[in-house]
Image 1: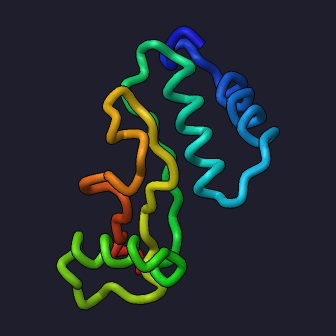
Image 2: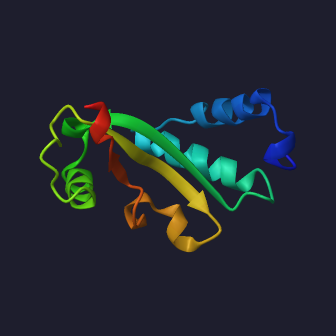
Image 3: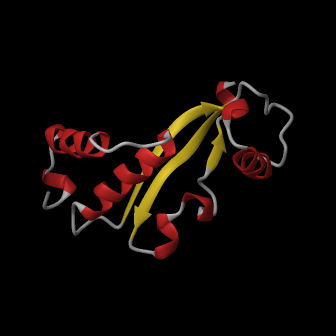
Length: 114
């Protein structure tokens, strides 16, 4: 790919297929590999991220603590609250290659959708 402005869904599907051809122990591992492939597939890409929406109760304890801090332990945060969760990340800055180093996007509770 030369740049995403000229990419097609077929190009993205090719990246997805290349990711899925490798064995992974977790969704996070597959998402990290996909983000890395996306970031390296185009010289114009600065940051590539993969998010999923998971119930708060299915997050790791570290991600739950991150989400709670982000919303200041809001009273409407419940086990069933959907959380926009960073699953994979890669980019030009070294810190962008590790989801645990995300300053504000690791786990974002979607309080209005609970």
